[in-house]
Amino acid sequence: MPQISNLSTLPFFSSSTYQRFIFQSLQSKCISSSSSPVPSQQHISHLILDQKSFSQALETFKWASKLPNFTHSQSTYRALIHKLCGFRRFDIVQELLHEMPNTIGVPPDEDIFITIVRGLGRAHMAKRVIKVVDLVTQFGKKPSLKIFNSILDVLVKEDIDLARNFYRKKMMGSEENLVQALVLLEKCFNLGFVPDVVTVTKVLEVLCNVGRVTEAVDILERLESKGSVVDVVAHNTLIKGFCRLGKVKSWASLFEGDGERKGCLPNVDTYNILISGCCESEMLDLALDLFNEMKTDGINWNFVTYDTLIKRFVCSGGRVEDGFKILEIMEDSKEGSGGRLSPYDSVLYGLCIRRISWMKHSHF
Image 1 (cartoon, rainbow, N blue to C red):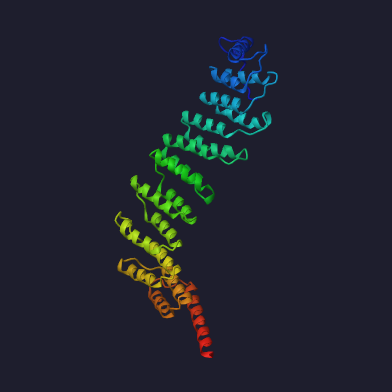
Image 2: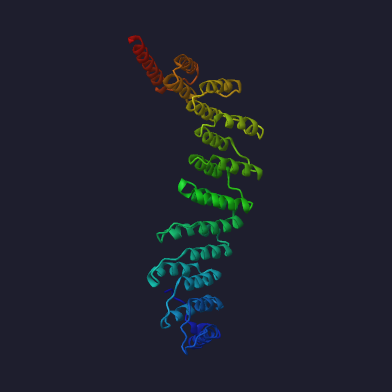
């Protein structure tokens, strides 16, 4: 139990007078047919909250601990912690949290951590609010959505940059926390706060990875409607998602009509994603058209462009001549293959397949 000041030194009350005052207050709150009422958790919680100083709140808590047949609970601890937060006694709050598993047999619950978050918010201690996440994990728990929600509430009001950093670092990383990321993103929109495009792009990527591309498009459109500048990386993320679903043509035309109109021009990665998508969907002519379009638009081919086309044309498309043409263009370019062998491996593999096929047919 945390150490507190000797109540005999407090103004107006001696220790005995204070305990009589508490008992009278308790009797006025309790309704019982017994001459010695056993207070409920609610009665003690209200009594703690009624105190005018953190020392009196602590003494009330200690006094209740000694009552026959009474045991503290999450609710009485929460009342005391709320009172302590009001006086910025977060040092004592920390002690109380760590004693709870021993005194009541369970760690602090979600509501207690939310109480701490809000207390820190009222004290304008935004940086300490973020640390509540680590505090929760000390008790072998994962922070709940409600805890994240309450933290974001405080950060948005206190420090937008901290809010963005918190959202990016704590919510992004895997499909496991996608639901939390989406819920909190919705909250951000409702609060008029938009996370940075890098963070939102990560959400789009995770959505696309699980096939929820339409939802990703909706988020992108909402982001743009709120005045946020969406870069080509975000668009490329959606293009890759649509290509995985085999919807290359529709998304290619959508980018040309919508993306370019908003000043988001395709880059070499955009074309490489589309070319790869075309190859995967066996649309080799469209892939070749995109290859030629890059030159028209002044976008330089890179190794990924060459390697993707050569591999698909030669290995599985049966178009060895087209593959050789791409190989020649690559070798004539300034960068060439950069010492990488995969294009040549693809050509050799394609020639072997053609030779085997020819031998089978000539045998008969």
